[in-house]
Image (cartoon, rainbow over the protein chains, first blue to last red):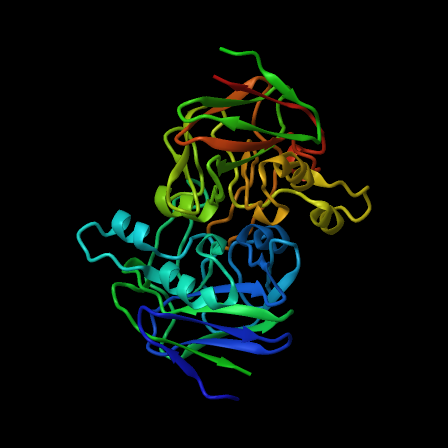
Length: 195
Length: 195
C-alpha cells in the first residue's frame, strides 16, 4: 500500500490512474466531500456520465459492486470497497456561480469547479468539459415522491474510505470540497492513495 | 398559435428557438416520451445540464415554474405550462449501446441518441456533446431510500402537452422516443409547436 497524498482544504488535483490500478479516497477527519471526475486518458472527450451510470446501474445510490460509466457507454471505474455507502451523483461541482446563488452573504470562492478546471487544464480538458462529478461522501437525500433534494452533512467518519478500480487508463480530477452545505460548514482535507 | 409539426415514431429533429419564443411539446396519442436537448445558439459548448438544474431547482421533479439550466449556470428554458407533471432528467438518450444492454433479443436501433446526433450535426454539435436530455413525459420513479430507479409507461394522455419558454437563443434537439421501456413498448409520434 502506498502512502496517502493529502489534498488541502478547498483545493483540487488531477493525475493519471492506469487500468487496474485502484484509487482509495479517504476522509481523514470525517464529514468532508470529494468531487471525483474521470476522463479516458487516451481521448478526454470520453468522460464520466451520471446519466449513463443511472441507466446501467438502475440506481442513484452507488456503492460496492456498482460501476461508473462514460458518455460512450463504457465502464470507467468500479467501486470495489466502500466504508460509507452514501455518495451523490446528481449535483455539479460548486462554483463561483453556485457560491453567489446559495451563499450571497459569504465570500465567493471558485469552488470545486474552479479547482478542477485548473487541475485538468494541463490534460487539455476545458471548463465546459466538466460534467456532474461523482461526489464522494456527499449526502444528498431525494424525496422519492416530490423529487425534493436536500444537502446534508456527510455520514463519513474520520479515516473511512471508498476504493475504485480503474477499468481503463484514466485522468482523474479530485477535490477537497469548498462549499458550506456539502461538508456541514467545515473545510477539511481529503486524502487519496493509488495502489 | 402555429400549426403543430409531427416527429415520426423513432425519429428526431433539431431547430432554432429564439429567446422568448415558446416551444410546446404535445403527446398526440398519449404514453410517448420526447427527449429534449438545448444548446446556446451562439456557442453550442453551452448545453443543458441536469446537475446544474438539480442544484438550482433543488428537485429532480421539474414542472411549471421550474427552470432548466446550462453547464454555465444560466437559465436556458422555463417550464411555463405542464398538463402532465411527470418528466425525467436522470437518464441519457437511448442508443445502440443501451439497446444491446437492455434488449439483447431485439433488433438494435440507433435510438434517440443516434437521431439527435444526426439532427444536431449541422449545428456543429458532436455526439460526445450530447448530455442527459430532459425526457419529456418520461416516468422514472426513484425510491428515495434505496435510490432504485424504474422506467414506467408515461402518464401523459392523448393531446396533453408541456410548454417551455426560451430564456436565450437556442438550438433544440427533440425526438419521438425509440426505446421499449420508456413508452410502454409502443412507438408513437410526438408533435411540437413554436409560438
